[in-house]
Image (tube, rainbow, N blue to C red; front, side, top):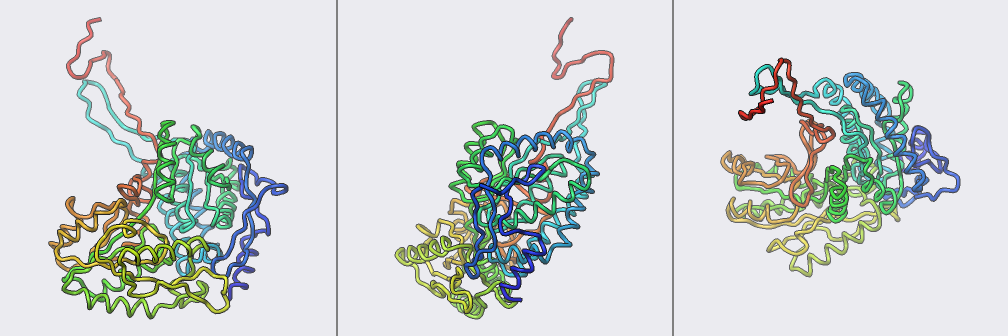
Length: 514
């Protein structure tokens, strides 16, 4: 299937229009007279469609609808909420191929990665079915006679979800579906680079909600960060803001949300590192580093951006990695043999070029790539060559995150030196070590080792299963999404004391002689 055929199949199959409404508050906003944003396919530069943007008045309709819906949804028994989320997962499964292709067309992921992202959203829906019956609290032994002490969890209300382009469906599902299982409603402000995906997913989710006779649970508010984004972040009606994006923007989101005593989950920059030790399985390590650095064209927050290789195996490892880099297929993401597709837009290409130039000025030596890439039949596509740059020291540009397939290659002499270098960046999202030495691997995952929120042993820094909590430390922002007990971020804890006796004994031996 070529790009033209894929576009026709996706737009017709998902019932997307030439101009789509970008605001849903129980009904879809009329598009007449609204500003629109075009969705550009980064594979060939052609327009896929456009999405009408909401105004401040439209945003207000969304927030009012969210408050009204919460009063109904929060009273629905949690297991019943789980059943409705299961139905959403089933609808996503029915549309998995089309939605995956849409992601490929809109943000440039390969076909397998696009389908994998929708599968992640389906997995989250399945996770929520079980979660809806496991929103456990604790019963705590009371020091007072004839008293019971316990904890319970209640939904927060309206959750604001601001997503990035690189996982336009999965990150929404992490937040919106888990928040819904807890009893919240969500207002989604998607990236302007992935608006059609947001519209298509919202249509599917809300069709399920509507046929169950419920008010809108998953609301959509497309608009610029300056308007809708700022309104949502500063709105006291949004009890929690979950933001995925750059560290610079996330810092502002965190400050503004905290200033009004709101809660936030911040998933920001990653400068992820892999350590390859002399005891590594070299075949495994080469594949793990290559995937981590090149998957999604280096546009994952968990992408491997630095690799530290022990000096005793450095030349051999680098030589083998260069061969892999030289053999991968770069090009049209619709081609099933493509490993590296396009960057998301022309701005990302400029960032790539600027970063390579800065690295060279700072002493970097290009081992592979560093160039733009031309793809037959896609002359306006945003393609670059996956790039390896050898650096003698870690400073300057190496401390920054660039959303592109750029891997900085460095030597180390001891595991202590490797860990010190690994941790000496502002970000703290994902990390990896390749070693069959149990002492090294245990050291790396200990409190004295990696300072990241995610640590991997003998597997890539990129990618994560939905069962584990996802998130990072330091300038990655903090907070957790997806599995484990991340659901608690979308709830408020309530401590309950019940006195079933006929007196009021006080704790800590305090007496009140009345």
